[in-house]
Length: 102
Image (cartoon, rainbow, N blue to C red; front, side, top):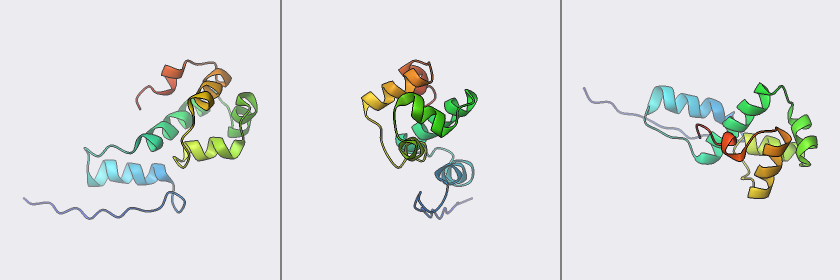
């Protein structure tokens, strides 16, 4: 049987990028791998919420702007190594733990 896939890409600013990734991964192309900025953003949000931290709490602890944390989690911005270190220290985890599964 021949399968034809129609892929429509939406702007992450219009829709939740996680929802787009899930739709693509589950329904369109199981072998598709989302861009690293999306995968990392998902991982950051996962770790942050597992530690019971809000974006604001993380931002204060990491000495970063809350909107920057939000942008990283949505895959809109790519953090520098310095910012990654600040985030890891604020959550009391190693840098490598931030990339588990990414």
